[in-house]
Length: 280
Image (tube, rainbow, N blue to C red):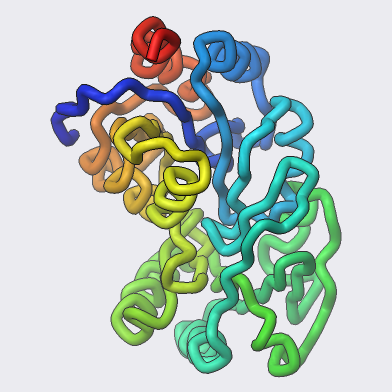
């Protein structure tokens, strides 16, 4: 773990969703819900970021009464709580086309998201049913993504060959450096977004739009794409279910998402700063 040397009062908590805020079954536990209420009572703001589309986070926004800017697609789209789009960051057509080609070369299945819709080549393909259940809306089937490339906010490479996903991630990071951001949001999902659409960019956007120093933002996550927001925030917390590599990049490690790790992290690492934050 990285030493915690920040003396700035924490005033905003930014949490990843899948593998962090929610359980494996995509549930917000009563303890997690209570922890968000405790943050609010301590005058610490709360919001979420995810590789999910904004529509796939609406149930969480309503459940947790989130009133701040929310970042979908790892920062590809920023929305108000009612899903009004504040800003969209589209991948360039050239980078989107090349990402899909590299994904195919590594034998992953490619998905494409616009700011509001989700497209797949096969409705019965790997993880489509699970993702539909998670985000609560259906994918549209398209065998030709070419007409959609100018509107791509996120491209996903999907495979249960986890080694192939990791190799594809490395290939895209090398080939599309400066043109797109590529990082795994799950071991079986590789997300490709605009180069500024990463979770580090989410911290920067929230800092500027909410007039909060980056050092006053705490972050919590479990996957390699969360490291980018760890690096930009004043306090970083890795989940107990995160890999050792991800845990090594955070200031603290909490319990797993199956053990109420989010709530534990709020109680153990964030809320102890509540008194000073409340009087700032």
